Image 1 (tube, one colour):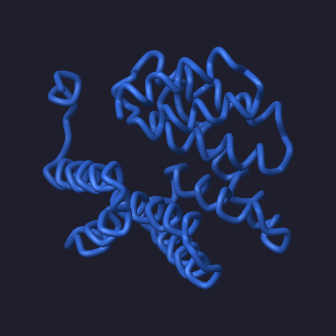
Image 2 (tube, helix red, strand yellow):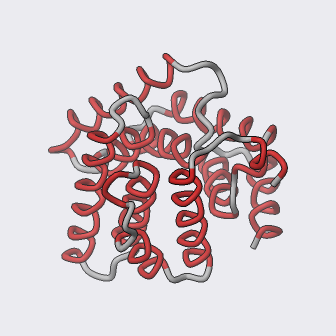
Length: 205
């Protein structure tokens, strides 16, 4: 809280952060669809990159957990459309590119598009100062994208970067961030880091 108080933010930015926190609270209560609806109905949604990015994430989660292929397609298309709007709002921010790459990665017909989004993400991150990217979910998305394509070394790099970020600034992560980190290390065969982050996720739960 003290760290957040010191940040100079506009009222619009603070409003967006509060909406994101409310939506994530609903996600924590297993009401992802209501969280997505809260974001979608926000008056600021059209002009806020952060709200659009969070809505895209919620639609992606709903798509991955949908009970039918038709619903999955609808949610993933909604996520993709929202991410395109994110890119129009802030073409120099990297988070929307990597989530878009992750969504497209499992589909052979979208391989080139996914790779183009990933390359743009890497380009934007490389232009920033070290440690400037503080969105742990974007780092997890980079891990998932590379793991999906079998690029284990690259996947490991991004997972380690997320691990370092949350080790230095644990308040940037919630239980889902730590759980994603734990599951990533389990898939890479690193039992100690898997158990460490799993314990953090359960404590936050």
